Amino acid sequence: KIIKISNFISKNFKHYYHAFNYRQNFFDQTNIFKLINVYGYGNCVHYTFLFAFLMDILKVKNELIFLKSKKKNFSHLINII
Image (cartoon, rainbow, N blue to C red):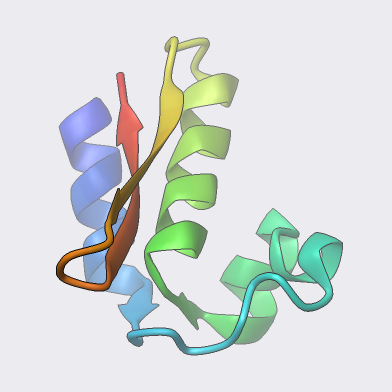
C-alpha cells in the first residue's frame, strides 16, 4: 500500500523545484486539501507533508527528516517510515 501511495503521488502531483516559498503563509501552504485540489503541484516539502498525512490516515508510523548541506547549498525534506 505504501509504495502504491508513493507512486500515485509522484504520478499525479507535479513537482516544481521551489514552486513557492512554504515559509510564507505556512498554514495555507501546508493545507492538504489545497495542495491536492487547488495547487496540484509543489516541492519536496509539499510531497512530504502530503505523504505523511496519508501515512497518518493509515496509521503508519512516519517521521519528517530535514537534510541540509552547507557545502553544496542543498536542503531537502523526506519521509522515514
